[in-house]
Length: 314
Image (cartoon, rainbow, N blue to C red; front, side, top):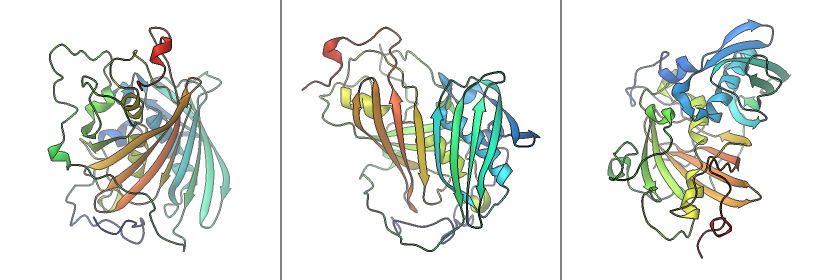
C-alpha cells in the first residue's frame, strides 16, 4: 500500500492509471441529481433502486449535499465532514431540500439542509463542512485490517445455501457489489467474540468525477452500511431486527478510486435500544479514505427480543 495519507490535492488520481471513463450519467449520479426550484430550495426524487427497505440514509444525505454544493458553488471547497440527523422518515418519491448557507469563507464554508417529502414538517437535517486545502500535519493512527483480496472473498451475490431464505430484499445491493472479507454470513454457526467485520465494496456503475476519482458523495453512502457489526457480535439465531439510523457522521480524508474499497466496521456498545457503530473505508492505493460513526436504533418487527436474546452468549 502507498503512503497512508494522500490528500485530494497533493495526489490527484490520474485517469491514465485508472482507465474508467468519466460517467456523468452513472446510475448513482442520475438518481441523486437535484434541481434548483427557487432561492435556497431544490427538488429531487428518491428512487426505490437505492433503498434498504426505505431510502438509504446515506442517499438521503447525498441529495442534501448535492443541493449544498450547488448553493455554495465553490469547486475548490470540497466536502470534509457531514452529519445527518434523521428526525423523520424520508420516503421514496419527490423530496424538497431547503438549504441554508451558514457561512461562506475564503477557505472553509458551512451549510445546512433539510430533506423532506412535500408537506411534511420534518425529515433529515444535514450539516456539512466544505474546505479548500490547508497546511497541516499528515498521519494516520489507525490500522487497515489484513484481509484477503476481493477476488478471494465470497460475493454477497452468491446464492445462499439451501433452506436459507432472505426475509427482506435490499435493492441498494443491486448497484453496489459486496464481498465478505472478515466475519460470518447469516447462515453460519459461530460463537461471537467480537463485532469486527470487514467487506469489500465496489459500484457496478462507478460514479466518477474529475480525474477519474470516485464521487466523494458515493463514499458517504458506502459508510451507511454498519449493521453487520451488530450481527457479528450477537451471533446466529437471534430475532429478526431492522436498523433505522438516528444519525450518521462521515469525515472524508482522501480520494477513492472507482474500484474496490475496504469497509472495516465495529460496534462500540449497545444498550437502551441504541447502538454506537463505526467504520473506516480504505483504498489500497490511497490509504484511509473516510471515517464514519452512527447511532443506530433497534426495531423488532416481530416484537421485542426475549430476555435471553438481549446479550451475546457468554
